[in-house]
Length: 289
Picture 1 (tube, rainbow, N blue to C red):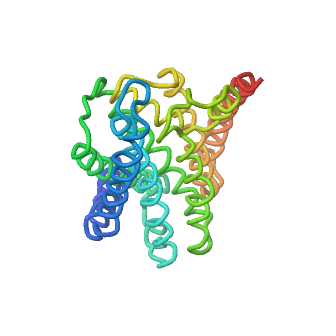
Picture 2 (cartoon, rainbow, N blue to C red):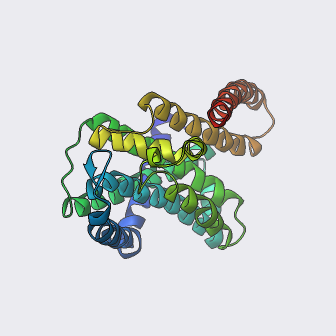
Picture 3 (spheres, one colour):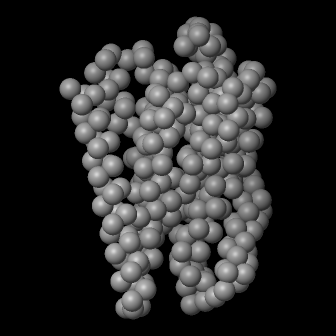
């Protein structure tokens, strides 16, 4: 396929994902809006009055960025894992696989669809938040870039989950036992400065903490994590998941010189990312000790 045809294939896949989101908006857009409204009422209005201020902000204002990111994370992940696994289950994924469209465009199209849903839900939850508190965005570009990068991370994660899932139960394991605990322990409802020193350091092993705090910094100008460190962790997560996705693409490539060249490039980039990941682990372990 030439570049023009590839662009049309990619755009068609993104439009398909968008139409799917809009067509079943009662399942994709409305539930997170209702859920976050309940969070604002229960945690913000009722419990927040007893808590008072957090890091110099009203509790409702403090949790608003975290709840927006919570919605973005769960919906970008859920969109890709449900859409791609649904295509596998319905066996119409085979139509894409036998088409001239390269596998990496299938990956990019579904990831873009996850980002679109994450942005749409994030926008709706932001409107909900404005009914309960005032949000004066301090750094708009940090807000936008953090939302997009975070949606990319979890869209890639959802795609990988869907590739390996064999039944519908498999696509609920990661959200239930991984995403939910990490999200609630990622500083959405509290500042880690309230924790004992040891648990502050343990919390720094949670990648969602960096995403939530980067977004909170963009909105409120306050963060428990240096913004540069937060961006580094987010980009590292994207790189690791992207390498896994490219590896899955390479498995189906026919044996050729192009595959050997891609394998060599994948190996060199992968080793670099591994070194950075090990350095991050070493940093976290240093914090724990």
